[in-house]
Image 1 (cartoon, rainbow, N blue to C red):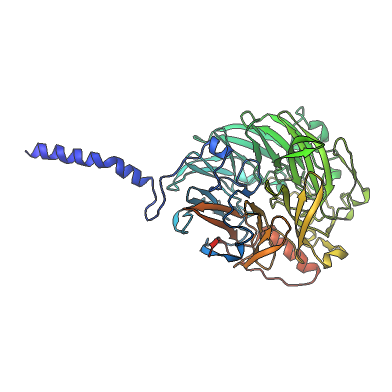
Image 2 (cartoon, helix red, strand yellow; image 1 turned 135 degrees about the horizontal axis):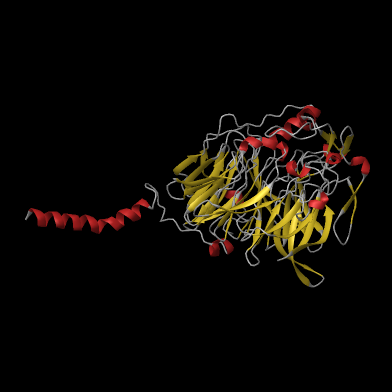
Amino acid sequence: MMKKNRITSLLAMAAFLPVAVIAAETPAGTDLKPYTPVTDQRLSKPEPQNWLMYRANYESWGYSPLKKINTDNVKNLKLAWSYATGMLDGHQSPPIVNNGYMYVTTPNNQVIAFEAKSGKEIWRYKKQIPEELQQLHPTNRGVALYGDKVFIATTDAFVVALDAVTGKELWKTASADWKAGYYSTLAPLAAEGKIMIGVSGGEYGIRGFIAAYDADTGKEVWKRHTIPAPGETGSETWPKDDSWKTGGGSVWVTGSYDSNTKVSYWGIGNAASWMPDTRPGDNLFSSSVMGIDVNTGELKGHHQYHYGDGWDWDEVSAPLLIDIERNGKKVKSLVHAGRDGYLWWLERDKDKIDFVDAWPFVLQNVFTGIDKKTGRPSYNPTRVPATGKTVNFCPSLWGGKDWTPEAYNPNTGLLYVPANNNLCAEITGISAGKYKPGQLFIGVSLDNILTHVRLDEAAKKNIGEVQAWDMKTGKKVWTHTYPQMNWGPLLTTGGNLVFGGGTNDRKFRAFDARNGKLLWEQAMSSGVIGVPTSFEVDGVQYIAVQSGWGIDAARMQGAFDAVMPTKTLVPQGGVVNVFRLE
């Protein structure tokens, strides 16, 4: 009898095992359903209610089709919940949402998972980094979702895979040696079973690259350097010495991706060291866009926005993939608002990138012209930096638009650009010294960088702008101006809205996407330099953004205060902010 009862008890327990397994896949104390794996199909055609990747879709539009929040009712937007991250400095990552699960990253390599509708913390992960590591840019720009995993690239040059439900570390792979100055801050790009990242560290004289890792194992699949070695395509644009080994070419913003051709597009930073007379030539593939086959790492085309960069105009923002009509023909385009102050229109094909058109969107006094066939600019030689030479130029080191992403709305047909206009710089080139791994290798003094700002007369009226462009005509449709600079990434929606922050008054704003009318604004606890997103849970639309001033926005504000002179205090401290209609 005892034996029979024991067997019966065991069978009864076994009957409940599947239930226990299912329960373990759902975070306790939440209304969340079991996690939905993220597939290539879902990433290629993301559901409107979700925000599955850095810019919502592979094309990098920064667009949500959701329209329950619209121009008529956005004035009723109220805070649904907020959450202090416990971290200082620049919070730049977008809240990523998959069917009610939200993931944000913060400075110091931290990932926090939430129930998206309530703000309840599910788990928190923090990658420990070496105490001696100096974080030149202590930030992180977000996670990638793929399968049942969450992926982050870290400031000590690792790629880490986490369980999406529990936050458990599943694998981690070193992408490079942080002691040599390599680091990563970008959100990875996930496609075709691979997790792709780029590395930063041009300020330390690294040799940049893009690499792909197997999503299941973390094993490196391929690596494509952004600075070619002798004999490789583009090597003829470097001097015949060893300067390519320390050539820079950082990649610090997530690439775009054409899932039909399997080609990804990455923005590449400037060459190292800064002074072009130390590395005569065009210096490919610095200050360029590179097309990379995601399965092989093969180069599938490039365009260099400007050659032999000496202005620190990193062109790291990935281009937006938009089909644009020109002369009655639809052009599969790459669109990029450059740090060099020009708006670039390129044509993409599976094996090449061609120039279409370009024009300035802010004050620019370096280029004297653009070749209509190749897109190659010509320079005013008095504004080209060199060792021992002082030059002034517009736009400034931080460019007409820095890393902050543009947005494209297919309903209005407009491209929205966060810009800084009427802003110039003065720098004096100096010797970068002998290269030493892990030490700054710039060619401009830090004091010069921190006080370089020169303000055009028009800057007394405005600097920061949100611009709307009709790419078909090359005409600017509207502009909203700020007296101060703008470091605000943009979100646009099916409700004909544009959201963005970026100013030192801590305000987060909503504009009418059609005409630029200011419809709503809310002062936050800190400045907003985070990427805004939108999502829907249980039929309710939300707008989410992190506030948390720091890094280059704070440094540029310091440069303003040094020359004005003014003293501007923008509180620090990261907060996740989620809004819904009242």
